[in-house]
Image (spheres, rainbow, N blue to C red):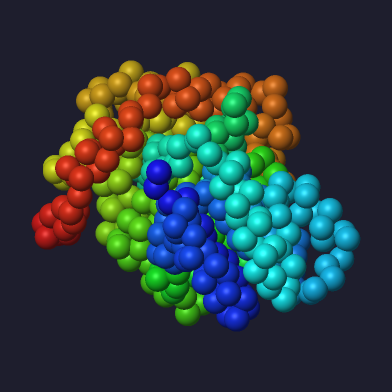
Length: 398
């Protein structure tokens, strides 16, 4: 049997070294490298001064199945009983006392291994999530509204899939406003510390909304953050799709190198348009440009009509003729409900669950839930086939 994988997240260097020696002496265990993004069979985590933050981080890692079991430790040799109770609540199997007692550690590890006898370690991720990117044919068509409410609708499905929402609308990303989230970190933090990117670091960066959706806000180039590159995007999305069932990306309406890298990696690209001539003209140009890229299969591009008006001068049929393709979905126009949700920093389903537009987002989410998911091997093969910076072709023509 292959050794069980152990991830160490220990702040105290001396304690970390002692644990490493004990684990390395056990042929049934293997310490994971910092850049190893696989699921850990065991996570040994040292609590810091902000223990509640650490507990929330561990709960998030367990929620997305990035750790099988958890051992906790703290600098104090006599930890607060409330700390021990909280450790039990999150499902920690052991609480290792400091200073390090080798006997206690060995006994805990033997108990862990015994509990795993007969089971097959998860050497690869069971998840290979679906990446859905959303692009506005022009500004103001409601791309962020759809991204936010689609993510929430997916997270509310049973059994609850894991969902992460990424804001790639640099400078003017509004997802934190739409969900009333005050995030400490954003994409720029990952770009600045890309060498540290692993499941623990990523979950520490993300913010969690009450709906269960995890959020990664966009960076702003004016705050001195490291600029996100296509390589950063590739690494982040590659890790996220192995941690989450659905990765929803709000790309805004700017066709940049980062956007094209997102499209290259996406399973589905949702082009958002409204029933106006300028918007449909832009949508047609975008479809033509994206179709010329060898890395983007035209079948992955779907068109969503937002603010659908049955009595519009340009009908849904007219839009389909203009774009030479059928509409994937249409979202009704409900300006009052949508604006009320935005102004209150809440998803539409929270403030107006029984409205037609709220039910529409549930139906849209169902389209993705019901669609048969490709196997991990199939998606890996597709990703390898589409790898490479073929998006450069578009910029070379401009």
